Image (tube, rainbow, N blue to C red):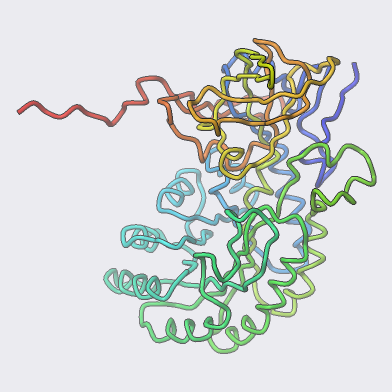
Length: 446
């Protein structure tokens, strides 16, 4: 049987497809995912190395006209193997905690290619990053400037900083992942940025290295990025002239298409008012590079989801099919603690069987075993008929999947598997029941 493409993921950006049906079975590249599920069990995360490399290389090529550094926003997926893969491609890293910096270093990355973001950096985190030689702190508030200055002074060091400037640009995304409006907790307002930079210049243990901004995640149009660049261009030029800054970071936020139906081959699909048009690296570059190039600075980009989101799937097995007068439920062994996006963001994930099915479609909910009504992956979704024992894949699960997982309901966290060509690597083992209580202790008897 010929290979049958599933219209999702990397095809939206590159034409290179890592997940497809071959002889009726879903594969990741050359690897049969039924065999992966049998070997490692379900639920399990599986990632495509080829897709991650391809996404990085295409974005890097699109940005080639300007001096740039792609700093992977590793909060999307922080497995050491993923970090190692991207470090070998030449990526830097956008980090938000001491733990993420620790991971970068353990994966062979360099602190001097890391930007440290986040609104609540602690004294210990700042000291750790300074000692390791972090490239820059993205500063979110005036009190943080003072704290970084004080910590640097106590260590006899000078801390490199960039102020995160909030341009008050609407990203047209979910309210929980919009960060560029004045009501969000991130950054300082554009109207106060010059004043904050002047204060930074007065602090003796700081070096002003750049300007940073980030307006949100899962943005599927180039317009908000271009608007951000235009609104900040004058400030960037003024700050360069006054303080000799080295870079401007425009952040990340390039979205991916989660709904495979949007790429069904219908040339008119994008006219739907229900979904925004997808964005490609070329669209993104064409919109912003003409504004950024004249600044004469190194430009930092901080994508996360774009690089890894469509490179991952979550494998799961149907446990029961429950029919009621009003609903059909496919109850699977994955749960909201394994992939929280549907419960948290109302996030959509396409769901397909590992074995291609010609069965008629049935409207059903796909739900997990956790004791919460919010434990679902799909509601009122038309899917191929499923039976107990059938295996499914939740697509586009490479970003904000495992990293946001938990042990809720005392469920062990999942294994992670990396497919690279014909090679299958277990890059994180499944937790055991004993792992659940590691570090806990009963009170000592008096």
